[in-house]
Length: 361
Image (cartoon, rainbow, N blue to C red; front, top):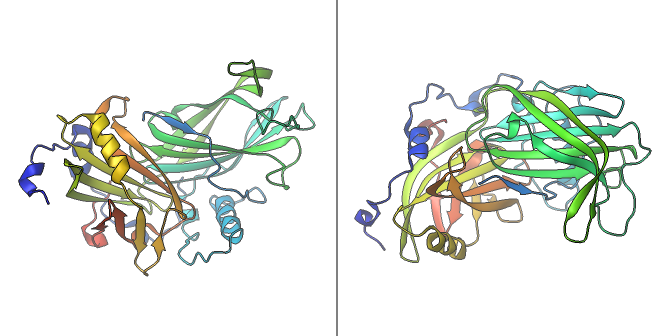
């Protein structure tokens, strides 16, 4: 085991230091708030199906659409998810629900928006008025389905660390009409989402075909559709724990800086000696990360069947590299953020302190 003095050369990157050690006025723990307030790396685009079942109808109250989506997801498996907590969704929901764009070509509705900590989810429903169907069988997966040529413009995505996008069509969700589809955004940000108005801009509507070397858009319409969604304080139902715990991996000394926890995700930040070679540290990190695990206060153990994760080299909000490695972890189903008691990483256990000692970002 390394002596603690071996870690003295690890200096917390300036960006993390400013965020982690800053005094925060909002020290109240969100789980104790019983108010029902509407809330609302290098960027990596991950087209993955993080949820397999869509919800049934437009929600009249923010959070209800995602509530039904998570319930449907839990019902679609044989497992027991007693830890899932959907009651908090209205408290972290946005206020923008309903039609935001209505043109001769397209109608775009915000089905739901939720945010907590540095993670946000937005579900859009698009109706193509000029088409009878937005899907057709080509025998080649779904690349011929209609979609947007650009779907991540707007300041909602300005400070994103990672984004997952999932398109749902009527063959995924029979409640959708043949000329409708939904887009699910899951965004992990560099910072906590602040209360305010954010824009989403969609450009060019058509379908993708191969030209032999790459995929190109066959447009139905070369237009732009821009609208706003309203988020509120991302501190709701989230917290961050400053740990500064040293770990040695293949002779490299790294430091577990902090873990940020929301009902939907966890962001785990490690720093390393800036004199070490990033590639070597990163490869050692990936080779030894082990079986990630999370233990909840009731003894429930979450394994990699209960979440997905991506390991990324650290960067600041401007995309400049810093001496940090980040694990972005997304839960399959909602949890209570304060219920997490331990993380297992590198076959070591890292305990989460009691909420009274937690520093909210």
